[in-house]
Image 1 (cartoon, rainbow, N blue to C red):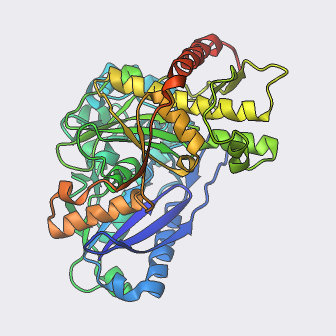
Image 2: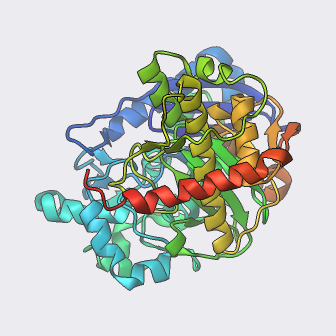
Image 3: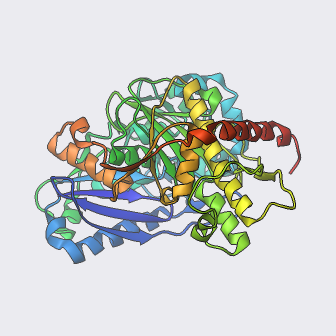
Length: 484
């Protein structure tokens, strides 16, 4: 048996698979987020351990024999979070999370240093880890002076599991301290935030062993022998391992709370000007690129909240067939946008409204706006040298056939829908645990799921969608200078 533990923002999921990669059981435990000020988002790292204990404890209660047979554990986690420890491994302050924007000024200052884009291949976004430490250095100097180790969230769980300070390439690539091409910490970039390599964990590949489960925990969970703990992956790379998106050109579109267009690469091909993320993959000698949309299904949830209709009721009103764009344009920038604008201050817009713009027209505009945001990410990936021939859709939004047809038509690409199953980050983490424990071939393990259906672009509507996308593209520069 193999165990995947995924540390998300809203909860921890533990998932068991057997040697044939069949899911045996899963359990979750909730997490809460603290927002002490506008733009701040924090969690107590002790809560991560409590939630992991609860999730694994549930598996022990319901599937004790299977849990006892675990040979490998893989980790996945929310990226970019700053977990600060002192010399005795005590947590110095609540962890600052990926969606915390307090360090926007520090991010801009670091990004103005040309070394950061040159070495990391990425813009220094406010959500990344390095600007968070720059903020702590400026605003909490007494805390900064005591920092002995900086860990990413899942790597704090690893410390609890193994007693070792270790991270892996895919998560480390989101800190703004990693030389992404060389897969090593950059001493120069660390020094720019007042740190050194001594403050960083050891790096391994996601498929490698990072340590062994502590005897105390192995005994508590009924596990015998030495249980390997894999390097694991950041959440998107772990999802890619679960989806089998690990070879050049394999891609998925995640229609979740946020949206991600993810493409696997066999080389490091950065293009920071496009605001595409270029990160190491969880597999050795592999990289990936992502376009990131901050409000995907969150945009439909916003419309649901103000109309009093559920998301499904809203999409059901559109009927069975894809409609031509109505002229209502929606920019899904409810909390700013990453790709392609890197603009934390921009906000959403509904444009083209008329007396005839009913609720269905607004729903249609929202679905199209998110699809056009994915098209922006596709164009950014192409500008970085990554061409795609098709994508696989995952996430809650993929349950809407209408949305998938809009996405396929906006991208002008086939969109595959996987057969029923759980191919997310916890499953990808469990696969990495299997690889590390058995020294298995990563490409043989991380295979794609069976495809249940393929949504083709609606050829008759492609020209109208292309025109609507161009109208959508023209709106951002028109509103960028308008004060909020």
